Image: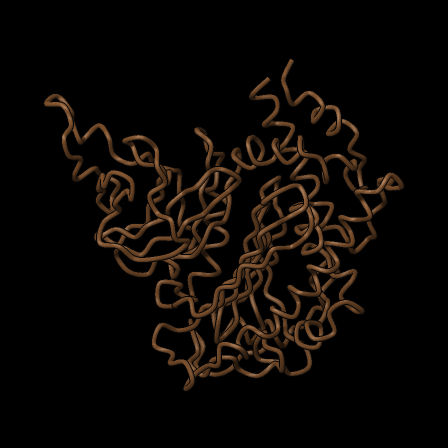
Length: 400
């Protein structure tokens, strides 16, 4: 019998249109299953190409005990490797982000090229072949500038996701952006609750007054109005596309939505957060493109900046939410943008959501919790939960 048999029993208790059984949110067994099995069987958003903009730039993505280094090579290709030396296994990159001409293990100084090939290993036997001891690769896909990795040996298909997302975000040319703010925020809640909170705006009217003054609430579980005039404007810019919402069992949603109250970007006051515009825009434009991927990311593309979000579980009741703000590579701090103004709206929203996720987790952890029904406008929460259950069940079957 699989050591995860109790997880299989819990997954079998899933109820359509309802939240998950308690233990799938709060137990150590579920955390171990999620990080060792389920999340290793799917594609995870890690960072953007702008996080590793130049040769030698690296970015470390971690999930439980697993650490992956994403690095830009001298050939400008972005690759991913296990962050573990092929000598005796020591961790190579100790900082979360950085730049290095080559990757050197701090323990015994085995040295690797940016392509993962072993360059130097002193005092080895005569028959030792450096070519057999390069860094172990991790599956990586560049989706229009968003970097996804899979920690499993047999990554699932990603072609439909790659085509649909790349088609719409390519106009923003992430290779010509730079990361100017990155926040790492620990939420006191299970990762699935953090995702569920993001997937609905049922709480926004009361919970996010700053956010809805700029974004409104339509399109986030509520139907967006059919605005023919806006669609004509978007067509002229080449950015008008039909809504894509988790098609045919795939795991992505892409939607362009008009901003509210005359806002031209997702900033605390709705005014430009960066004076140097990006992509095809030569003047401020009153919409943003939102991209969601299961199971761990969401992104917003505006005329002046991009903001990306990823989450990874740290423990059953703690989740790392990483938020990054990107602007044009030529934008100058203090002239074109103020980092605090750029980040203010989503910092406030993240703080508010952290509170809601925490009280959600604490309530579920009590003996009084009963699986509850989703509201009609929480359909995107149900989509996430259904994704989790289906992928978790499939992953269990593979190891049974």
